[in-house]
Image (cartoon, rainbow, N blue to C red; front, side, top):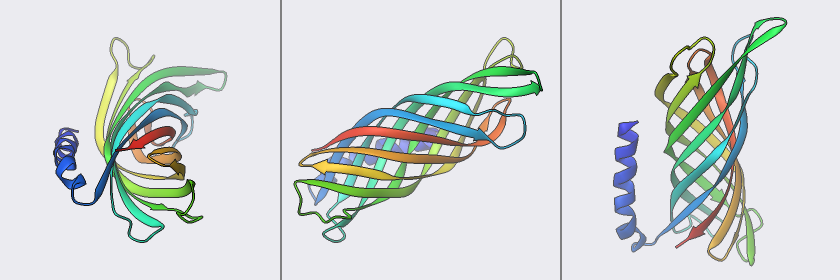
Length: 197
């Protein structure tokens, strides 16, 4: 997590001079909704929600309708999970998740760029530091915490008009360790609005 934070700080410090060399700089934020399915029998579905914010950096387009984009951000998610201990009962766990990292994405204006409002597809891969804190009946007295780096994927749609844009993406964090519940893939859907400077 510390390495990711240091890398993020260095990239942000370099953003201002880079923008003067044909790069665009922006910011976005919004809410995150989603769910996570357990990877072994007896684990119920985790319901998660939260918020997120990110800074984004994009060079001049690779073509008129295709460009790359680097997103660096943080998300805070919270929710509940159910572990079935007996056929007639279930234990409930509360968890909080913090995600810090970045993704490299491709942006495609699939209807062309010569429009006042331009729809686009965005998708990519990233690396994230994930901290999960769990509290429940099998963890008396204090929450149990795990922190690790994981690979993630995202894909979604956006709409851009002038300097403003709105996006909805599905983000998958692979093989995340959730204390007391094992490992699972975490899914969330950030719905964000942003601004290019």
